[in-house]
Length: 257
Ligand code: SAH
Image 1: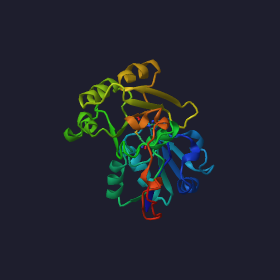
Image 2 (image 1 turned 45 degrees about the vertical axis):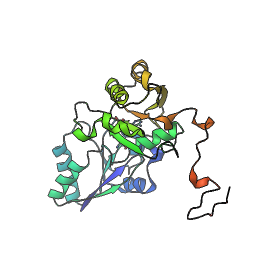
Image 3 (image 1 turned 90 degrees about the vertical axis):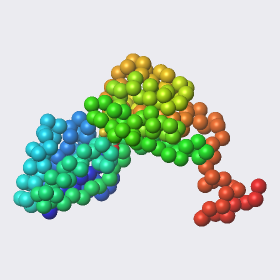
Image 4 (image 1 turned 180 degrees about the vertical axis):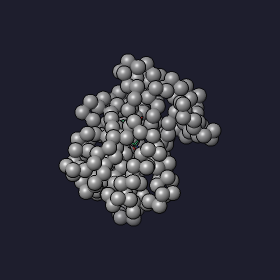
C-alpha cells in the first residue's frame, strides 16, 4: 500500500517526467494544490479519476483522505509543484502516512530553479566563476536556522537561488550587501517560469526591490543572484575545462598548448 508523490514540474504540463505522467494517467485519485499545479496537467488523469484540490485542506484532512482511499485499494497520487524535495512540505505527509502503515514513492520533477535558469538562458555554475549553487529562502514568517542566515550564505559569493522570497527583497538586498556583494551584482527574477504569463526581470542587487515592486512580482517568483546571471557573460571568455583542448579527462586526452 502506497501513495505516489509526483513532481509536476514548474508549470508547463509538458515538463512532467514520462514516469510521472504515466502514474498520473493510471491514478484513481489525484490530489493537487490548485493554483500551483496546472489544470491542463490534471486534466490528463483518467476521466473517471477522483480529482481533489487540496489548497483549502489541512495536513490531517489530506492524509486521512489518502489513507482511506489507499485502504480501499485505490491508486493515489499526490501532485506537487516543481520537484517535491525542495519546499514541498512532503515529509510531514510521509511521517503521518508511515504511521498509518502506508509507504510513499517519490517521482522527481523539474524544479522552478532549473526552469528559471533555462528561461534566462543561464548556466548557474560557470567555470572559474562559481561552482556552487545555494538553494535557500529569505527568512519571513517561516524561520531559517541560525547557521543559514542569508548574510552568511552569501559570503560564499556563489550563485544563490531564492525560493519563497518575492516579498522579502529589501531584506535580501541588505543581507547580500552586508556579506560584501557589490550593488552591481546581476539578479534575474523569473515570475511564473514556463506558465503562459511567464515574465523575466533582469536587474542588479541595487534595483531588485524597486523593480520587483514596479513589476508586481510578489509571488511565484524565483530570484537567481550572482555573477553567473550576468547578461553579458557570452561576451566574456568563460570556458569550461571539460571542452578545453589542453585539459585531459576521462574521455579525452588533452593536447599540449
Ligand atoms: N517544489 C517547488 C518549490 C515550491 S515552494 C519547486 O521545486 O519549484 C514555492 C516557491 O517556488 C515560490 O515561492 C517560488 O519562489 C518558486 N516557484 C515555484 N514555481 C515557480 C515558477 N513557475 N516560476 C518561478 N518560481 C516558482
